[in-house]
Structures are given as structure tokens and as C-alpha cells.
Length: 186
Image (cartoon, rainbow, N blue to C red; front, top):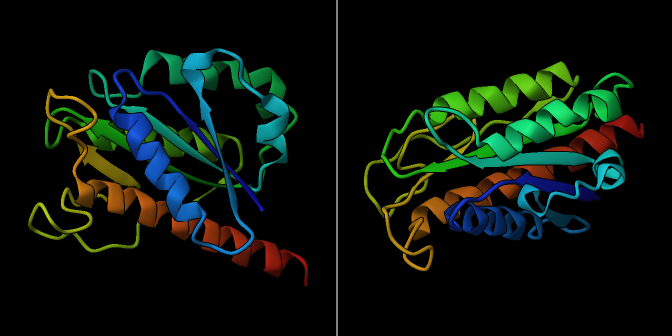
């Protein structure tokens, strides 16, 4: 089972979150994660088409996804949307910003709407919001994994609980994808 993690990262904080998502995917037997950084510029459309799930990730800039991820979304129109190549794939999302709130929800809504337009099936986060920096889902997101990074090196943030939340999302997507695939085989 192949799960693509299509993400952008400006400084490295969201890349660190993407790696945590991949680690969560790997917790599920038979699931493999492929990290696809959009900054590389060469989008492997065939890999995305062959994937069972696609998890989108972006820093939240000015209240929405990065321009590079938005460009990939727009570029997908001819290669994936018109022929509906991602229809019925599992989808999810994660985001990071410098502020605790930072309008991250809008980034996740942008990703979820994009997935819906492709006929994908969105998987949200199944963790209750928890108070405390040492708790998963400390920011209280339901639509996807949210992280907050101070203006410091990616070596220092996002903090462990935010990375644990991202890993939980990756594992959840892999489990739901496996469940979906097994149901489809009946």
C-alpha cells in the first residue's frame, strides 16, 4: 500500500512534520510512505496516480497554503482532475505556522476542498483537543494535523507533541486506507 505525502516547506518546519507523518504511515504493516517535496519542482504525477492515498502538507502563509502547493493544485487540473485519476483515493492534510492559530484551519479547508474536487475521501484527525504542550493535538484541530513553530531552527520546532500528532495522522490514514482497500476487495 503506497501513501504519498505531497508537501511544501519553506524553512524546514513543515518538512519535519512531513517526516513525522511518514513515520506514522510506516507503523502500519504493508504501508509505505513516499515523501514528495513540491519545492523540487518535478511532480511525479504517475506516483501520485498509483498511490492509494495522498496526504497534503503546507506551511500556512498569509492564512492559506503556500504558493508552491497551490501551483501543484492548479497544475493537477489536466493531469489528474479532468480524468479523475485521484477519485476515491484517501486524502488528509497537515499544516504548520509561526503563530498558535495562524489561520491554519483555512489551509486545511483549502486542502480538503481540493481533495473533494478530485473526488477523494478526506480523513480527519480523531484526537480530542488537549491542553498542554506535551499533549497530542494541543492546537485542537479536527480537519488535520496542526503544528506551531517559533521563529527558530527546525531542529527546535515543531515540538514533540505536534510531531506525535502528525505521526498519528499518518498512521490513521494508513489504517483507513487499508480498511478501505480491504472493503473494496470484498
